[in-house]
Image (cartoon, rainbow, N blue to C red; front, side, top):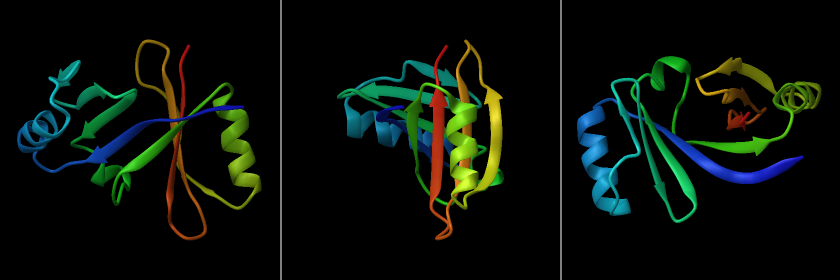
Length: 114
C-alpha cells in the first residue's frame, strides 16, 4: 500500500545555488543541510536536493511514493516491466529508498520509513 507522493528529489549540479533558489521558492530554511543532501519541508511535502543525482541516473526530479513494503513494491514494478535503477538502500535513520525506470524512461522513487 502507498501513502502517496510526499517526497520529490531534484538532482542538482550546484548545491549552494539550488539551496538558495529553493529557500526563496519555499520560504523556509532546510531541515537537513549536508554536502550530500539538502532537504526542505513545505506544505506537507519533502523537497530534496541531491548533488549526486545525475551520477545516479536522475534525469530530472524524481517523485518518491511512500510505501509500507519497499521490497514488495519494487518487485511488483519489476514484474510489471520496470527496470531497477537503484536497489533498496538504507539512507539513515531506518529510511529505505529505491528507484526504477518504466518503459518510457520515467523515474519512479520508492521510500519506506522505519
